[in-house]
Image (tube, rainbow, N blue to C red; front, side, top):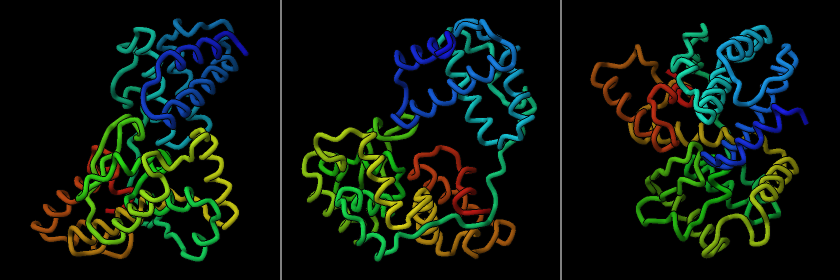
Length: 288
């Protein structure tokens, strides 16, 4: 292992910001950047020696590789984290526009929703994985959230509350219980997990992630992040009374002024339920 990779790994190990998935993605991306910097000719760079020229070199390399805008923006956030940990946060401008990184296009109006076929679900042999998938579909949870889910803590009667340690970005959030199916899935989770989480005793989170992947692959399930898209689209219909554009509903330009106001308000609600802050991100799930 090169010195820079080793030093970055040490910084990551000493600073456990965010959820497990966030930490893993950060280490993976920073390790990649260390390798890229070496290949770009910065052979003796130390972790504390990060400079603007290194950031510029990386961004130029990513553009040459035609990396997706969203991926570049994610890498920039990891770079800023690195700079912050070595006391150089101000070195990297807050706005990606300083590096001519365009805004991400969230609007596709093509649905990425996935359903959870009963026949596939019934073939999953591990009850913890099966109920985790049902939680994922019923509440629009991320994979890490549905695996770390502790029903004895989360179930508040009329809503569920997700601990910050389960969530991306370390942000606790609340999701309302609005239908009987959600209540039924919660009861199953109580029966399976008891006072614990959806990860069986004696298994680590990583071991359960691998089991989740294996069980899904065996029954032909993939890209289960699409369950969050389906949740968002169902909530939009429930809250507005009309379908989302991504599933054939009216586009923004076709709404009346009153409908546009309602659309914006409901999108913000859905954004928060999904663990986001911005209304604009809902275009990924709902279209525009």
